[in-house]
Amino acid sequence: MPETIAARHPTVDRPPVPPRSRAPWRLADIDYAAIDRSQVADDPTLFTLVTMASFVETGSDLYAHVLVSYFAEDPEVADWLAQSWEHEEVQHGAALRAYVEHAWPDFDWQTVYDAFFEEYAKTCTLPDLEPSHGLELAARCVVEMGTATLYSSLHDYVEEPVLKDLAGRIYADEVRHYKHFYRYFRRYQQREAHGRWRVGRTLAKRMFASRDDDGYCAYRHVWGATRNHPGRQSGSGSSVERDYQSFLDRVGTLARRHAPRELPVDMLLRPLQLPAPALSGAKAVARTLYRWWLHA
Image (cartoon, rainbow, N blue to C red; front, top):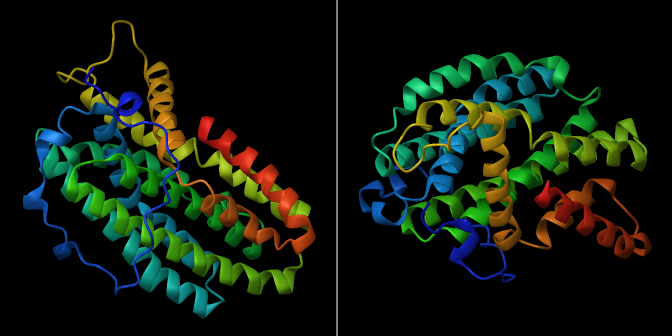
């Protein structure tokens, strides 16, 4: 296997790419013709990661519709979800799909995505949401923390200029989405008044659940379509479960070397609304939990 995540860069604590303050971007802003395929073509882990992300982001409109239905009696939240969040998440999927199709043109994106979506669609249902609106908004904060961490890590790791630019744009969107979900959470928390234990339990549950369902579903479909491809084939006697664990180990190495250190911790703690005297100790615990999550 070519040199990839484990050896490309030394371990350093770089700050995350700063969120952009400019107006929302469009697909036309991405110069796909400028992609340097030589920098990504032989990196199977990067191919799998970007393709999986393109699948999950493209299918995000399904989950967005579930959330819009859940918040139907709150026009402010429902309108933002339908008109802003869903549009931008789907744009992430379209942008990543276009990148995959330019960088790895031999991959039949549409066919594999269709098979993925048929299975994925069965998992996006109202019963999977948290039992109260406030707790679901807290859980969404964790999801946005996770995706912001992913795209910040990808931005820091990748050397190909177009993908680096795209990862930075998506990262900025995810941080902005977090701010919206957190603002709405605070409003609902004033009404629902959940104790910190219940909020914390919701955060932890969603934090570790986010590593399993969507990603494994996407991985299995990418794996099935590419396992016999030259340069990406699995070893003799391999299985999807074993290869997925190996993939997670490689992505974990990427995250541990390139993920931001402090911003995700702050994002994780904010819904607990802790008083200042408790914040220092809580940050130490949250840092440990975050490191554990990166290793999970």
